[in-house]
Amino acid sequence: MFLRRAAFISSGLAPIAGRRIVTPPNAFVLARGISDTPAAFGKTKENKSEEGSDLPDHVASTGFYKKHVLISTGTSHWAKKYEDADAYYAQLQETLKAADIKVTASDAVPAGSAAESNTRSLLVLPDNIQFPSVSTADFAVLAQQLTSTAAHSAIKSHVDRHRIHVLVCVHGERDCRCGDRGRPLYEALKKEVKNRGLEGRVNVLGVSHIGGHKHAGNAIVYPSGDWYGLLEAKDAKTFINAVTNNDVIWDKWRGRMGLSKDEQKNLYRQSTPTAGSAHLPAGTAPTIEMTFILPNNTAQSFPVPLGETLMTVGRDNELPNIEGTCGGNLECATCHVVVDPKFADKLPPISEEEEDMLEYAIGRTQGSRLSCQIKATPKLNGLRVMIPTVVPRKFPSMSDFRMAWQAQPAMRMQQQQQRAFSAATSSRMAVELPNPSSSSSSDPDPPPPPPPPPKRDFKSLTREYGPIALGVYLSLSFMTFCLCLTCITVLNIDEAQIKAIFSYIKSMLGFTPADPAPPAVPTQAAPAWVAWMPEWMRSPQTRQILTSVLLAMGMTKLFLPIKLAITAAITPMVARKLRSFGFQLGQKGGYKNAAAQVKSEVKERAHTVRERARERVEHMRRDD
Image (cartoon, rainbow, N blue to C red; front, top):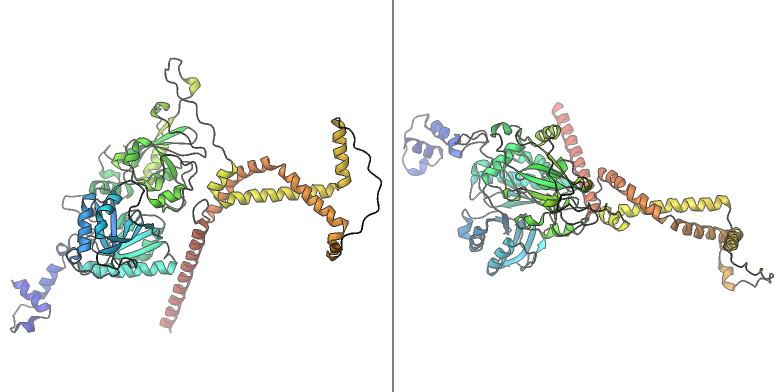
């Protein structure tokens, strides 16, 4: 009671009460001291959990869910308990709750067709699917569509143009800390995206309460599904850098969509040196076993940490043909793999955007997926993945392999440095296909012969490398044409010499010599239109040059097999060099994305120059 009265006086409401309450001088200090303690706001990021966990309190502070549905409301101010104020929100939340689908309101502007109270626009993440108009009568169909693996869409939808979505909790009516810390963070992120010219790629949205009062400001990033907390407005630049580069800020990381709390904790331990594997008992690291079947008919097995994508595993271990040029943002097909059909029902459903990118995949076949969209889960333990070749091949059975375990200490040390694996689980195994000649004669089921080497025809090159393959071929053709034309000009080959050569060849083959040339007849007068032609076109030299050009073009055709072979040999090197310069080859919208990236970098540098100039001016003013 004593502290309650002190707080009442400190709020400035004591005169309204009609009487004065006498309190000691330190009463206000005591009240403020209690309200500002960590116990009032929960544990801070330095505090450990009550169970004595070795992890910061913000780690694994989000629950398990499979998808996230955003309701476009056009406002960032919602009632404290929005589910009580909006029947549409409450009904949709109740419908999708059983399917582990999270529902949140966003400040996105709804589509024009969604103007009625029982019709809204929805955005499904991480699938990145936009439903312009969904009524309450469509909820049952929507729930079935979101939980089904079928690609058919019963409700009208389209793929959202943004590649990355950042959701910031700004629900100040529900939680004052989300309003005080979330809204400045939201404004800073919007400003940073605009300054860099990333509006078409990164979409920053304000959303209703997502949980985590003591971790505000809170944000979620899709398509990765990573949750972050304890963010401030000053972190906007670092945060956008991490988001666009597909990096994780582990000191702000709260968890990840699709993982349980234990899986999130284990992933944090593996990914951060401070939480390292020393806290894990030997042999209990949360990893699963995966085998990659390489194009050269060998296989390699790796312990993969839960939550990590197959693309990351392939790039960390330098597996061939797994490049991931776009960084896992569904903008290319350079991380294409073929998954074991036995695990088809255990994989996440394929999205429309992934289906579009697979159209550009080399050697696509049944079971083709993008490795950036497949994360390691306990259900995928023992998964086998085949790296495709240009010529599609059948997925091999387990009888085609002879397991030969080979310890590689150097590779184990490299994996420890890269992912902070524990010493007991950082092992790598190499598995080779058996040699048919070395198999015993008593083997009742000898393995099949290895598939033929991949065929590198011009069509496959253009599909894989885009216009760069055509550019290399045309450059070789032009060089060959110039070489042939130079030879014809230097050797002074004219019409009479060509006729003499062909006559000699015909006589060698036994053909009857042609009749002697008829006597010359007077030349007829040229047509009247010839007089209108320029003088250089009527001269014999022009006709000789045109003849040489046509002859050189014909000779160039003879070098077609050689040109194709050279094109197949040097196109990968040229493409690799151009990719190092920032060009995005062999993917949809690659040149537009490269141009946008250059534009973004120019804007960022201009912004940096302006900031430096402003600082210098302020410094000069202070000196004056």
